[in-house]
Length: 137
Image 1 (cartoon, rainbow, N blue to C red):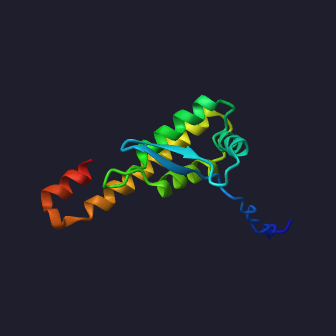
Image 2 (cartoon, rainbow, N blue to C red; image 1 turned 90 degrees about the horizontal axis):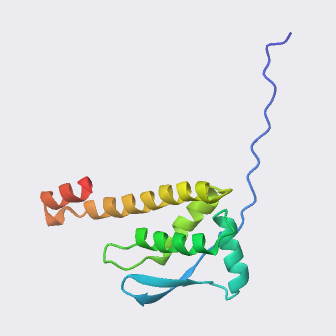
Image 3 (cartoon, helix red, strand yellow; image 1 turned 60 degrees about the horizontal axis):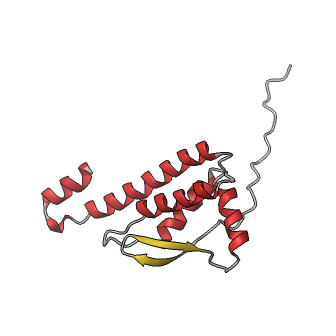
């Protein structure tokens, strides 16, 4: 028998597909209404459902609110960029159902919030106490 290891095939990258995105229209200081960036509402909604591994419009609506809450900028506004980054994170996890989506959403939102807190902690010009409070958050 030969001690040679069989050659492995190089990993073939997945074709890049365009991630599902949202545009946000501000309703008030705490909420923005998501809408399709390209205007095709039905197709966009179906893509959101597929990205979140669900057939439930209620799950999509609740998820979009949760993502917005986790995507606030330091000034308090909701970041469309952050919302779309969280959606991309979840879509990349390819959840097959709401349970898998919920875990991916939790990971993505935790990441978004952690990065926001870390960016605020970097502002040491407010003093050591401020940095300690932000890091402990």
